[in-house]
Image (cartoon, rainbow, N blue to C red; front, side):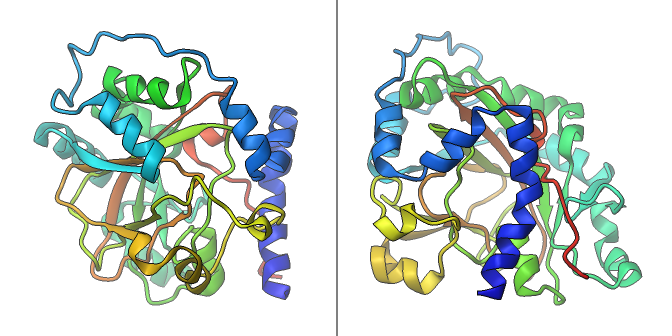
Length: 308
């Protein structure tokens, strides 16, 4: 119980900041976890536009097939970044300082991760670039790709727009506590409540295997939800609970070579996992139907220390 209360308290400053920026966020956060209200919101979508896909980076992808797979499973695998795009983003991430554990006072280069942990005496699980991601031309090109928008409109409706763009490292560490893992969204299944309708694209900028922090997704969990998972303040659930309800065979572990990409409906249960053998570098582009929140555009929470 103490752990649950701690998790709720740690998120309160972020939620308060969201409500202050856009009061309409509160009804979504309150009711969006309930399947009845969520299904009603899906009925309000506008028809998609037909976009010019001439300049897409993914000419081999069938947009209708992706949308259909999202409706059924909540997940589609099959994107592959061109080598020059992934290499450019990787080079940018290695030469540009990131912010450890969402803390703007903890600035470091990826190669200095171990030294930063030693100097601070704390686990550093993540390194986010926040708004610096938009200094990377290749990341901006990917964010503006017309095929990604077409898929989003086909699935979410014509209101779909980019609502967040994140680039971050997941670092291996031996110091992580359960709270550290929770705050980094690792090793605990959860669903996102950022919008009434949304999808997220993920691209592995460098290869990810079973030991470098693969993403996990529970197929079909965006379409069904136990009542006790709807009427709760906590979006996180234990792995044991998820396996018992959905079955181990529904849990997909997403590994892939450099440039591997996938798209998911983040209302389905998913989680990151702890990188063990080496760091993971991932780019996320989210599409939603509501006005984007300035702070959430780059995935920055409002952090309150709970060390006292």
